[in-house]
Image (cartoon, rainbow, N blue to C red; front, side, top):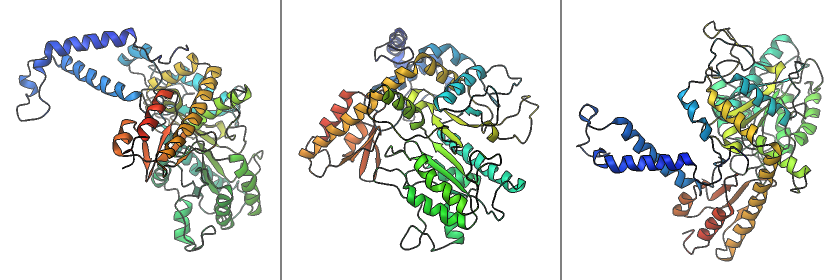
Length: 494
């Protein structure tokens, strides 16, 4: 058993904590104030040790959440981890403020471990090393929150990239208008939120404002909210390129967000297929599409790989070992037209704190507006202070579980997802209107939404008349069996 992952058995700390808390609860149960009603005592007349009260409440919270883990099936959040060794660090303030590659005066940090993590993902995503340091070398940082921060940073970088090209005159095209953002109808909801904050125009907004009724991909000419997708949720390359062609013809360079695993259907866009069409369109309209050019390309492609940017590399390793017979599309820096990638570490690896990795290239590193004397360091990140625990957690996860073991886990997950799909199909024998769907390489299985008791018990995620499960490393065959058993009941969909 690899270190760093929960075996499902109680640890000594778990048992000691429960025994201690139970003793506290039994001893002090008559002191617990009512949570409702007018007789709740105030702090000034409370005759009980507040730390004991807090411990009792913590035990209740812990027990309540732990009891939900087994049937946590609807969200891409791996629950199979054990970071008990980190308890001492909760009594320390770890602050990774500033650029991870720049020294600063706050020495209570885990920048060294952050750099090791970034080196790991640089190799995992086939980026150029920082030794020697060139413009093509990877640069990135560990996020203060999940992939939403990385998506915002990527869009911010893209906006500044095009602004600098406009000022410097690097673009081939002499009459360039503002860039336009493209994302699919299955992209994460954060994309539009980030675009609004950054004042980046989407293709729908630009179309409605300047080219009303002229959309080339709809019969009515109206502009859709997001690029249409195929039956499994991957963006339609042809329709995307038709849109880019329309706006490029009118002087708008593209910012394109592609998905390595969509939120609800778990679909994977194919960057290479898209670029093969897109590069010709850019050149046709006098935009640069030469990735080896020193002046750069008139396009920014960002990969939102919140789950897939961790899962797909290990699935590819499993494919190379012949443990599975499938692998996903390429998405990483082997593709020279990819500008940036983001991944949420709490999804595939599991963590008690939401975080992630943003990675781009040294030549795209943002230049901070100031060099704050307060921290004696340039801050090229988005959020300033970043907790140092997240870097340490991810460092521990990749240090204690080898890539080969991760590939084995990925193979197990994709096989279990196939098992779930096959088993869910048997529900149609009892409920003929029941439908189930799973896309290529996906850990997501969609099916007809059941009644609320089943939906809530298995913590499913829903959209309209559909629900889904996400087969993460903590999901077991027995949990899937229990779900399918519940769905077979006569009143499961009433």
